[in-house]
Length: 138
Image 1: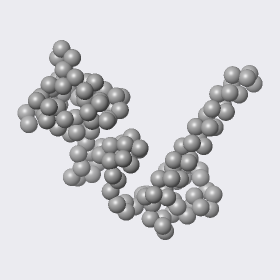
Image 2: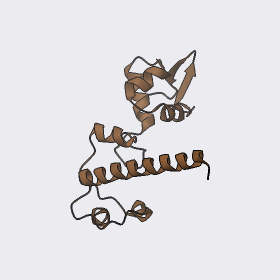
Image 3: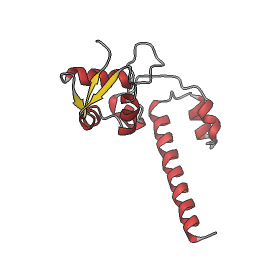
């Protein structure tokens, strides 16, 4: 293999190791002491089947942990939790109804790719002259 390929593979392996460390930290912080995931990690079984293990919620994530995971408050699957679209709509509403994309990204802390996805919902948001508004009556 060429040295560039070797370097790329080495960088990928470093990223995998870093992600595994983050996973282990999150398991230590949030999984119950008797969880199957924690037992498997302790036994050294770190393959992908862990992804299929249901996670038992022991307590809600605080905002710092939610931002660490990059998932924010939720994705609409849980009743009573707001979605990213709800967060952005509220942010726009709280600021008078017209906000720039950069202000939304900075003010909400939501990643810009997620903001792009959210603002792409034309049934909920309308952009004009660089400002975004809620499209639906609230």
